[in-house]
Image (cartoon, helix red, strand yellow):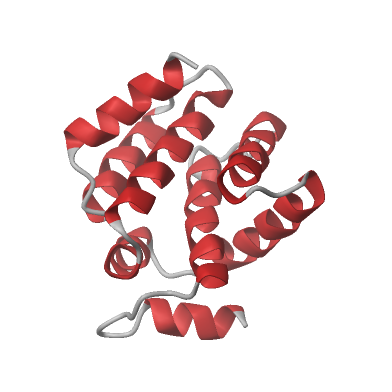
Length: 145
């Protein structure tokens, strides 16, 4: 299943992802961000689960299951550039902005903004086609609670 999703994400012209695949792909971006500083901390994992529960109206077990699939996808997915460009072409802008907000929650979860996380946030927002203004507005909304 994951290899089929990766193949579809990296096709020359990715098509709109069905909802279950879009969920896994977008969750994988959260995992990639949390892993970017080399410390996949429990607080970041908890924040990923919280974001998935809120976004998709899931219970804790469903969110943990989706995160597990996302962890596997993230480990096999191509480089971030190809991965995010494929998602950009397959997911609506509003959903991409919501993912940026969820990514900011992960970045801010441990109270430390590492250089690796900041760099990946800038690159990911750009590759997803999310403007700097919308990314910054999402960060401000998230930081205010």
